[in-house]
Image 1 (cartoon, one colour):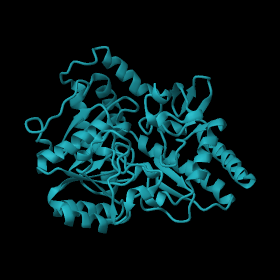
Image 2 (image 1 turned 120 degrees about the vertical axis):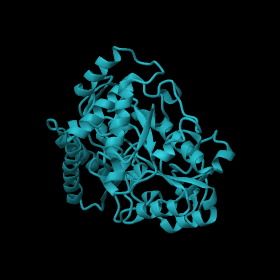
Image 3 (image 1 turned 90 degrees about the vertical axis):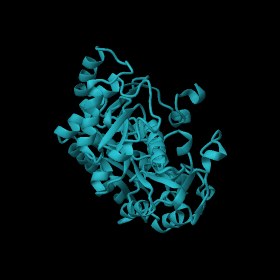
Image 4 (image 1 turned 30 degrees about the horizontal axis):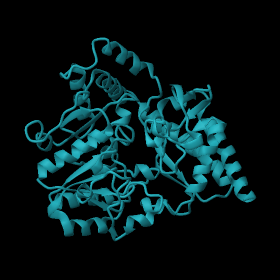
Length: 421
C-alpha cells in the first residue's frame, strides 16, 4: 500500500494510526489504545460509530441480498427522504461524495450546454480531475494573484485541457466572482461551492456572500451547485441550504447521510434532474446498493424524527466552551470557525475570510496541539485545515471533559516547546 494506507489523507508518517474498532464517540487502535474521536471518519459517523439503530437495520436488510443493479424499496425511501428534508425535487444515489460532485457537474454542463465550472480556492470536492484545482497548497503564493487566481492542479496526472475548464475564485469575494462572470459568463455552466469552507476549518460565508453567488448565477444563466457532502444533514436537517436560506439548483450529499456506510447522492430542481436518464450519462453498479440504501434510510429517518442534530450541536457548544476557557487563561488570540457540529480553532486575532487568510494563522501551533492530543487520548485531524466533527454519542459519559483535558495538556506542552526552542 503506497504510504501504508488506502488514502493519501491517512498517511501521517510516524503518527499514522491503524484502527481496530469504534463505538459511539471513541475508537481503538490495533494496540488497544483508546481515543475520543474528533474526526468521525471526516464527518460521516454523525450518530457515533457502530450505532445499533443503523447497524441492526442494515444487517436485517442486507440478508435479502446486497447488489442487484436493480432498484430496491430502500433506494426509493432514500430519494423520498432527501426530497422531504431538503429543497430537492428529485435525487439519485451514488457511492461517494466524489461521484456525487462529478455527476452534478456533468448534469450542469448537460443542462446549460456550457463547459466551464467555477470553484473556490481551498475547497475540496472529491478526487476526480475536475475537482482537484486550487485545493490545498502549502504555499498560498502558488495560487497566484488574488485578483487573477491561477489554475493550480493538486498533484500530477490532471490533463491541461481539463484544468482549462475549471475557473478558480476566492471564497467570500463577490467582486472577484463578478469579474469572472463578466469575463467568461457565457461559458460558465455552474458554480460549485461548499457553503462553509470545510477544508479551512469551516470558514463561514460572510453576510450576503451566498446570496450574491445565487444572484450572479441567475443573472448569467449558470447553475448553483451546493456541495453539501460535509454540511448536508449536519448543519440542519436540510443542510446548509436550510441554515442559510439559499436554494441552489443542485446539491451533493454523502458522509452524514450514511453514518459511516458508503452512501451518497445528488439531487436538485426537477427540470435539471430531468436531464437524466435520456440526455446525461449516469450509472454505477453499486449506486443505491442495499447496504448503503438501508443505512441512509435509517439515518435520515433518525435525523427527521429525533433531535439528534440538537444533541450534536450541544456537544460542540460544550467542547467549545471548555476550549475557550483553556485558551483564554493562557492569553492566546483565537477564533472559532464553522458551527458547533463542525468547527475549527484558529490561533489568530482576525477571523479569516478565505483559504489565503487561513494561511496567515498560527496553524503550526494548531498542528502541534492536535498531534499532541493523540497520546493524551483524543484524536482530532492532525492538520489544521480539517474541522472537528461532533457526533450524537459524544454526549455519553465524560468524553467532552476528556477532550478538553487532552487539549489543555497538549497546548501547554506545545507552548513549553516553543519557549525552549
